[in-house]
Amino acid sequence: MKFSALIFAASLVIASPAIVKAEGNAVVRTENAVNNNTSFTVGMYPSVKNELVVMMKKADNNAVKFRIEDGNGNAVVSENISNLGSVIKHYPLEKLEKGTYKVVLSRRDEVFSRELVIQ
Image (cartoon, rainbow, N blue to C red):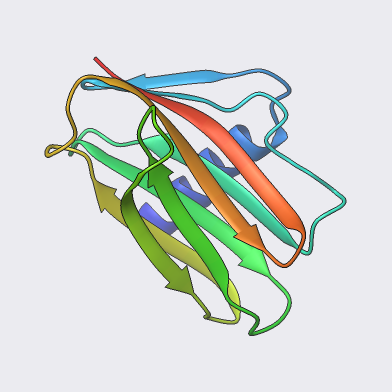
């Protein structure tokens, strides 16, 4: 049941043309969340546990680099994700100061980025 609710939430985030999701002290702007020109699909939303939930689907094992960058472009969170298929990751946000961050997922010449605001 939890998994189907999560898939439904992911579908809403990915399919909606312009959504701002807010939960706790985090806001994620997800407008144009689907980029059909990349080899991976991404959805993300803040959770009630003060985490950023990132869902990604990719067709191969090539690594995708995940980063949360501060206003100066410095990585405050960084991880290489190499799992095949669908991946759900939870990134704690409680240690981030209030402010605007950029969430960036990239591989080769493909880049997906969204704004993350900690209030």
